[in-house]
Length: 188
Image (cartoon, rainbow, N blue to C red; front, side):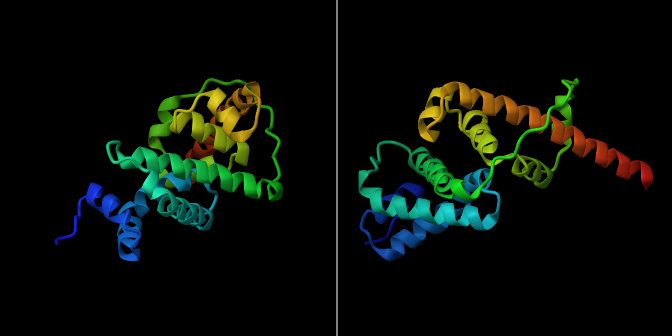
């Protein structure tokens, strides 16, 4: 009998619990999972740990997956929840940084289009961890403040506050990035 090699086939084959099918699923979805995890982790090592933990959860719970629904959203939910669990587990080691007060200056949002992915990642990574987590969950994943508050054991108002502070800090960091970039261009 010929093995299935489509996305659905790989997922269905994984139900057998055989290591070769789990390895095929891992290889097929690794990049997808890593892309999500890099938004939540400060380092590639942390992201890799979240990816591996996510796959372990998938392999343990694959029989609960209902194949009449797309696999990726189910998997993405596991990845995001694993990233949150990772944050909670490691939160005691992280210290919250205070955000500096800044004037509310006009900001040209089109400047973001000029950022390279690496620059944008570096800017996001410089946010305090809780700000970055709330920003990702709200702006990228589309969770409501109520859902974020429940997942992170926060008040809804705290989630909103963290998002506002994250956006304010991002504005400052992007402006700073372009001030430095424009200074380099003037010097050369």
